Amino acid sequence: MNDIEIILRQFGKNVRYWRKIRGFSQEELAERCGLHRTYIGGIERGERNVALINIVKLSTALEVSVSNLIERADAG
Image (cartoon, rainbow, N blue to C red; front, side, top):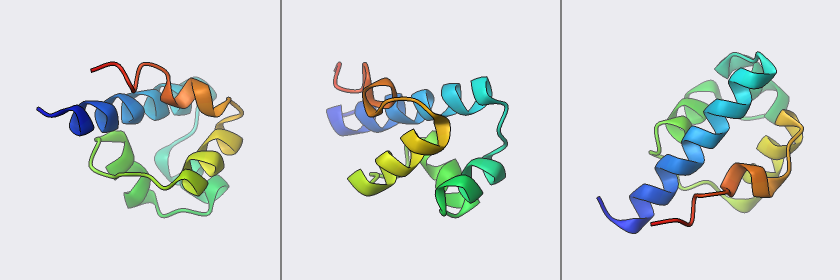
């Protein structure tokens, strides 16, 4: 696994963690962000390289800072 894959997987784990803490389904999070449910699933599986604007949308919907979503994501 290369560094990019590690970063994407950690980011996805962080999104999933905060989504579950908030009690949201993937569909509910998607609605709150204005994104598609399958896109949220792809993020959580580490399959999507998420644009900055979508990271901000996720952060806002989850009521966490962007840094909470990306923490440890840079640790290779």
